[in-house]
Image (cartoon, rainbow, N blue to C red; front, side):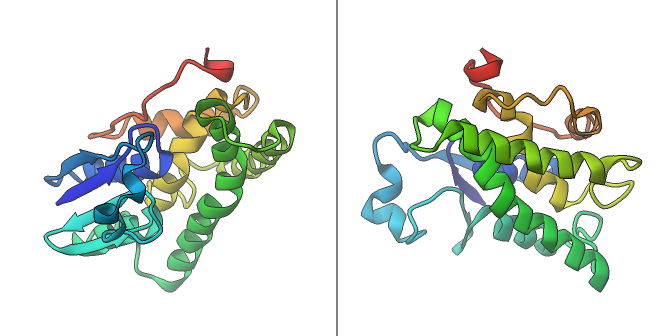
Length: 203
């Protein structure tokens, strides 16, 4: 099983983290985004969208971080990470959508400005980041993880960009429930961190 990734990509880190938490064998293949390797013809054969991460599981190729999380949980029968009852499935999907929406256009986008020089209005994306963090803070008040007492792929999908949000000048200090949740994820056996960049509030 090979994961095509980039160490500064939060989308890639989600999958790297989950693979490590599962304790399954895998190989990392770094894609040189700065050199445009993700747009090279050989990579586009793996993912026509030209994005990381991509998982190659002995010829079964899956792109999109959320899709890979679901694939891995199902492949290994890990109903602890992706419960099968219909209500929990729906609640999990909600958070995967949040990861692709509010997280991507909030803390992820704010970090893209500082780390990669993305052309977003910093004040707008920082404001979006605080809005979603406020909602996550409320969700975590009185519970250990997003869906209850145990972690699921919903938590993994949100972790990386929230953990490194200060790199995008998003202050996470006011969100005590969020910070405690980050610490709980970081204490899980097999945890691997998202590479830090000394920029923004993390400088």
